[in-house]
Image (cartoon, rainbow, N blue to C red; front, side):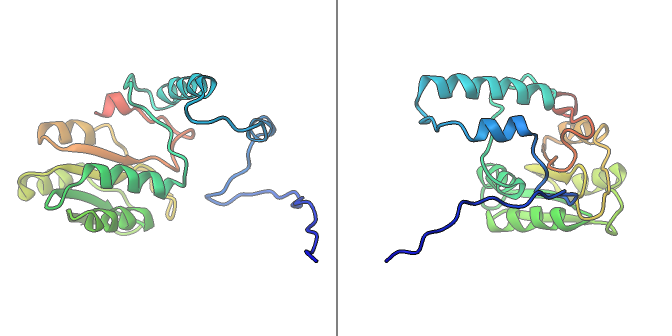
Length: 190
C-alpha cells in the first residue's frame, strides 16, 4: 500500500541571504493560478506585458527583452553560450564568485576568457579595461558583474559601455544582484 504524504506547508521564514528571497503574497497567488500552455493566446498576452515591464526595469527599448525561467546563473549561461562561438575573445572582470563563473562559462563555450582579476570586493578600473581591450585585439564581448553578490562590490558601468562601443565589443552585464536595487541602464550603457 502506498504511504500517504502530508500537504506541503513550510514554516514561515525570513530570508535575508542573496537568494532565494521572499516573494510578495500577490506574486505567490499569481503563481498558484492554473497553468497556461506556451501557445495559448492568453499566455502570449501575459508574456507581452512581462516584456514591457522588463523593458521598464532594464531601462531599454529593445523589443527582444525576454524573461528566462531559471536561476541567475542559468540566465547568464544562456546569454553567453548563445553569444560566444569557439575562438571568440571575451574580457571578463573577475572580482568575486560570479565573475569567476562567467569566465568558466566563456571557456566551456569555446571562447578565450581574458581575465581582468582584481582583489575580491574591488571593481574593475575602466583604464585597466581599456588597456586590456587594446592588448587583446579583436574582442567579441566584455563581461562584468554589476554588483558582485559574494563581496558586495558595485561596478560603475557609465564608462564601460562607451569603451566597449569604441572597441567594437558587446557588453554583457550580470545584474542579478543589482536589478531592482540600483538603476540598470541598458540603453545608456550600450
